[in-house]
Amino acid sequence: MGTLRAMNESLALTATKRAPEARQTLANGLAYLGLIVLALIMLIPFAWMLSTSLKPAEYILRATPEFIPNPATISSYTDLVDLMPVDRMLFNSAFVAVAGTVGQVVVAALAAYAFSRLEWRGRNTVFVLYLLTMMVPRQVTLIPQFILIRQLGWVNTYQGLILPGLFSAFGVFLLRQSFLGMPRELEEAAFIDGANHFTVFWRIVLPTSKPALATLSV
Image 1 (cartoon, rainbow, N blue to C red):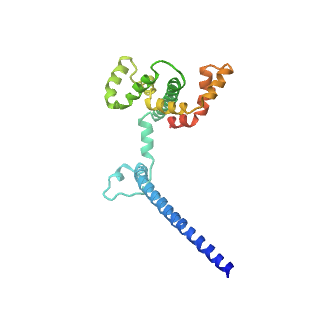
Image 2: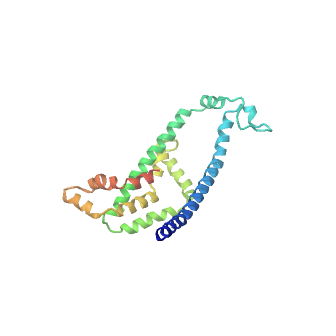
Image 3: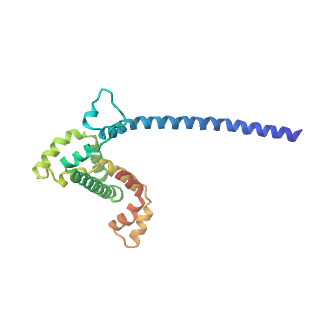
């Protein structure tokens, strides 16, 4: 009798534990289903845009729109390639994006190292003043920045597009916080071995801060 009672209590306890797990599984399933539905709703405009791009011009503004193009055509894409220098546009976009990202990460990393690992008078004051630039709206500096670029003769040039975006207060703040969390013992051991600040920055600080660098790059 005692054995049967213990078995019944064990089964009851197991069933009691499984009930919350089943409810949690059901809740997770419903949550994922809702997220999938929302994702599909978000994709509808992009799917409609793609469908419209494959329709002939006279079918785009019909009174009864059709989601599936019939007949389908790629004339919109061929006309675009014929009328616009698409290859040059794609190259410009890729070059400016890559160069701007790499340049911003390099500048932010160097500034963050100076603000976090070097000791110099007024360091914290300068850092706070630099952070205050994040409070200035982009619209306020847009026209003065364009005037400066025009005076430098950088209109319609790569440097006019890339250089103004190299200095990011948020990037410096993000990397500085990452660098501050690095143990001082690593840096001191490198100095004992004869390393200078650039060696420490290149061989120790940057490799150990890859997550922060990747976050800033994205």
